[in-house]
Image (cartoon, rainbow, N blue to C red):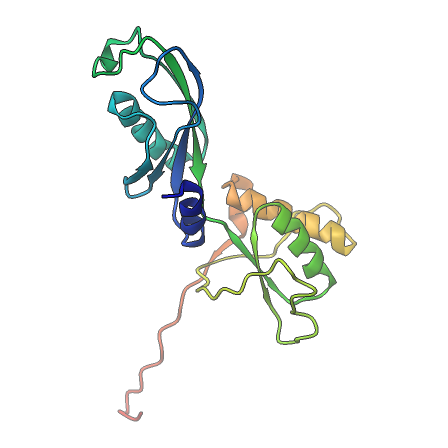
Length: 212
């Protein structure tokens, strides 16, 4: 299995994972530098970094990395730590870098005007997928929004009004204020919570007269 193809597939499917990579070695180890192991959010793995207790400890750390959304570096001394006396006392050391693999967030832009084109460019560079909602084909098209994704989803969370107060006037300045708040929401910054509105679907009215 190609791990990078699997990462792309998982991000598109909205799933989390963590990628563990041996970034440095010294002496004899049970694997080789640049070996990788992908740990999915359900605990399943793809690839290997050598097996044994080292891999088990990295697997546990990967679950924490997914939860905290923060990378971690781990160092193992296989010639000094008795806990790895499981066929892994090879006389060497290795460093493992564990990084989170997160779903790509999508920014939906309602309206395809000048501000939206500027926001789309800035948000795309910041790592957001782009969706544009506009019933005017002259505004919402691939020429104006080449980075836009054709995806339909149910909206469960709404943040409004959008944009940090920076005195923005031009479309480019407004775009920066909006994308800055997108990043704040993605990183769970506490100051952004006051704008979070919970969307609640309304039940269909019940006709008490028995009419269709």
